[in-house]
Amino acid sequence: MNVAVIGTGYVGLVAATCFAESGNSVICVDNNEKKINDLLNGNIPIYEPGLTELVQRNLKAGRLIPTMDIKFAVEKSNIIFLAVGTPPGPDGHADLSAVFAVAESIAKAMNDYKIIVNKSTVPVGTADKVREKITAITNIQFDVVSNPEFMKEGAALDDFLKPERVVIGASSQKAAEIIRELYSPFTRTGAATLVMDNRSAEMCKYASNAMLASRISFMNEVANICDKVGADVHFVRLAMGLDSRIGKRFLFSGVGYGGSCFPKDVQALAATAKHNGYNPILIDAIESVNENQKKILVNKIKNHFGEDLSDKTFAVWGLAFKPQTDDMREAPSIVIINELLAAGARIKAYDPVATETAKAVFGDTISYFDSRDDVLENSDALILITEWNEFRSPDFGKIKNKLKNPVIFDGRNQFELDEMKQLGFTYYSIGRPAIE
Ligand code: NAD
Image (cartoon, rainbow, N blue to C red; front, top):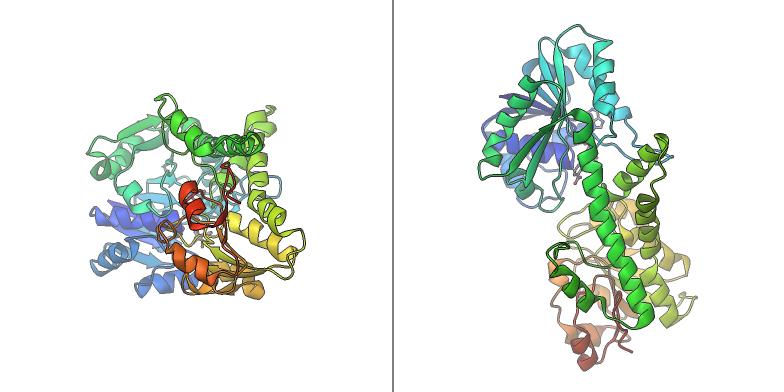
């Protein structure tokens, strides 16, 4: 099939590459000249494991064609995906300006029947609005399909090539079948393809992300109660997870969720509810628990060292909002580090891949290092924010030798309490008794 993907970010580039990998001819479009030039030279503008190799292979085979020319892409393609950003507007509603701008560009360039597939996360009713905008510009036939994306950054290729489900929202059976066929190489192993109306498909994505975020906020709240009553959230999580109605996944407490999806999607769902006259009490609470959670580690640091941190230097492990990505959007590290800086602290930070994206956030307010060991030298404590694999089994002897004081603040509950005690660390984690 001839496919165009408009918006070559995390979602668009992965989707375009995977469709090309399964034999389609894919034109990927972006209005960011640097991104397209980088891609034309085989350089991938984002960090995503395995993606570089796959992009380069498909560029070489001529199945993946990067361009800024949306008209060319529309004319050559029967299926056109929208994968542009939908960031939060000031009132929490998703900002759909990029979606509508692209819809209008598509309408102006349409030369025959097209299936326009919205892969961006968009509020319920957006497919109808896209339809209206295009109809106002052209008489050419088209269908609008809502196809939310469920990939996780850091495992995006695997998620796309082996999805757990594909959701297709369409008012046309013909369009739904064509999109089902496009996905069939990825669903042969038995993944469900669910065909439904546009509005339900749009709602699926928000409901799924809000549910996942609610598990995180719920467990963070349980952890905070554990802290107050002297229980250990580690054991509580294990016991809860063995109940098959609850399940083991997504029950980890920490310093809150971040990233480009959960925060904005929870806010957008709440905004949609309110706009439609419904007060989303639970969904609002997910967000406020999360905001509070980003400060929990700072409170522990101040309880230990005092409010004034002006003579303190902290070693930080992990800046990205989660492991396996360089994405800093809404990363809890931003709140934690800014609070510490405001209290006068100095920060020496290490992240395996997010240094460059972090520089765009923190500038020269913190120092960046190339190894997990270098940040420890003469620091007053280690703060673990993102649970990269390389932080899981560190050389504790080295940590102790290099730090001024053997103090660890672990925002991701990575280390065993007994081991920390035996090794003589002062150790604070989330929802587990402090080792002092
Ligand atoms: P992104 O910011 O990484 O990529 C968006 C791209 O669109 C950028 O490269 C930008 O330059 C381009 N763009 C913006 N306006 C354009 C225009 N008018 N013409 C051409 N290109 C334009 O965003 P993302 O993380 O890929 O997310 C895209 C959508 O997918 C969002 O709605 C997001 O919520 C959703 N989503 C993201 C993820 C994820 O893990 N990142 C997962 C599922 C769904």
